[in-house]
Length: 302
Image 1 (cartoon, one colour):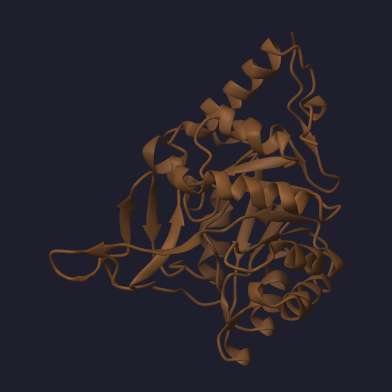
Image 2 (image 1 turned 180 degrees about the vertical axis):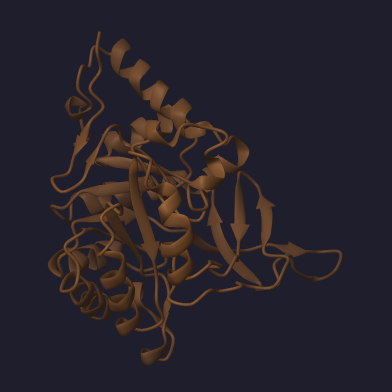
């Protein structure tokens, strides 16, 4: 029985619903020795800023029960080097390249989106809005629907690329932010980014991370992320990419049943660099066992 795992989102068509998440997959090239990138539905690059960033001081990663805390600080090579060094090496791959990007001000988001949109080989843009807006005293773009709407609409004006907005879960009501992004012109939403957390070294009497707090990811957050996807799917009409603790095909199926059109795998890549391919195979086998010839025919939760 042939299984059609295609996900058709209009301007963006995925061969299957599995995407490697930003921040855990480098620039894609780092994983090319472990798997064939072309077998993925796509991958999202490490977040790109206008200028290179060295990130936070170490230690900046620590393991938790069923998860991981990270405070990398958005370290990256910057726009110029990404376009001149990394992107040319990716042009021979046919998989979807999604470039994650972020800024400290709306003009920075606009500048990045404008430059990235000129590159034919980039298939989609993913806005990381979990960043402090220096023009607003450090308030995160993802915390205020009005500010979020301003930055997304500003980017929309300079880009015709498939535009994904990656939302933060660290808000009172994620659906308000989802609606704001949709109204501003987002083509899809990634739900969700990491949760703010802390771990304390009781022997030394101080946090494990130099930054004190970090983003919690991994299996520990899956039930919460799944619920946020379920809520967001029912609040907007645009597609949702489900993220949060996915490490098996069964996890992925849960998110798809909750209404996500595709899923992103993050922390699990560190445990098994080939996990994305195993999840794809698992989804295909699950569909075959359940007599589902098309992924789009999966029964959704009420």
